[in-house]
Length: 230
Length: 244
Ligand SMILES: Nc1ncnc2c1ncn2[C@@H]1O[C@H](COP(=O)(O)OP(=O)(O)O)[C@@H](O)[C@H]1O
Ligand SMILES: [Mg+2]
Image 1 (cartoon, chains in turn red, green):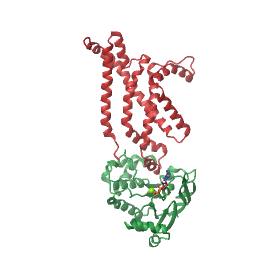
Image 2 (tube, each protein chain N blue to C red):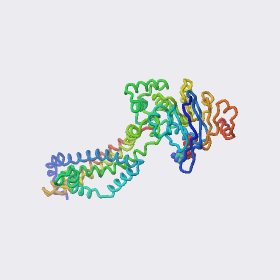
Image 3 (cartoon, chains in turn brown, yellow):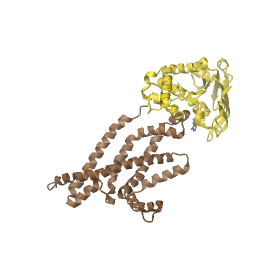
Image 4 (cartoon, rainbow over the protein chains, first blue to last red):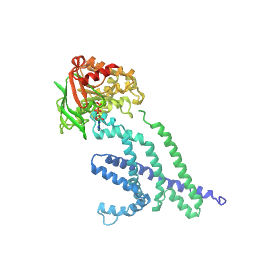
């Protein structure tokens, strides 16, 4: 099976695979993680809010996102966003949204639902006495959250947040449905062009595995280091 | 002049009434010890004083401010009322120095330098200067509780509330915390202290409040309370805890 295996096709494609493909994949992963954590934190605060409107909205949002296949959401957003943009800006024609922005928004909105649940359990993992102690010194609810509860919640949840980022890193490969040149997209294009499907898909799998495995390894090491001593 | 006035306070959790028409007062400079069996509502009562626990009926006035008034700025009131908890509640993600500085900066808007200096002075006072850069988890229970007292004092409170400050400590650490509290009392700090440490009560309390099943059963001068508790329930409670 490996008799006709052509390593050379991989080597020749390396600059394209990494400088174009992997650069996009990593950019999307990092930006969507940051956006997802910011939005996810807001959603988590809404979910824990004593105002029913907010908590119901956040809960429904999370449940909706978690019930839809990601690939479908990617598709939908890509085709709908131009019209949403037109509606929001009042433009005459659908607003052109490139595949990058479309996928970034999609992943941010989608991942936010997962980060929301992680951060929510992080907040709940902080003992109630910490809130009492903060408030007893006159700190407002916002100060208590910002300086006492969230820093501890993030510390407690850091390993899980990073693990979710690794999942996101793998999930970004779904942007191939928009014909985007992410890492997998680049590999697929070379595979098609040179008729070297076996080499390219095997190599792509190896790279995803190596990066995810190494990252998971460091997350486990980190987990032991950041644990808060009580 | 009364620093804390608790007037006919009642509170329920659903069908369960935790506080039943409780009244007592703490005058300026006075030390009042609150004791009673576990579950009698002591923690709940002391937390109503700074509004951490809302009440259903009655009125609470602290240093001229009505806590139970909807218009009261609770954060502002709380910044003048120090509170020390059974489980210390230091912030585990911050160093000891930062634990002492945080609320000074965020609530009292002191500069970082000013807050750190004030914190350092109070750490010295509780004998823990050497630990400023450590984290709470690296300190013993007794040390953590002394830090917690220093942290509360850093806000320049007009009154201090203690909720069983020594009951989570190993026996050999109780004294170091009580010593700090005795010193504080001797300096004239107004204190409301939930504790079963009757030695402390005998030494510095002016009055003792005995609670049982959500009621203030006895509210007496220290001498009267220890000489001859009026109620049978207080007598039983005292004989039980003084036995060991
Ligand atoms: N949040 C709560 N919900 C329901 N019951 C509570 C709550 N907090 C305290 N209680 C009950 O109120 C009673 C008094 O509690 P507490 O004030 O902590 O007593 P103490 O400090 O004297 O041991 C206990 O029976 C306790 O179970
Ligand atoms: Mg209690």
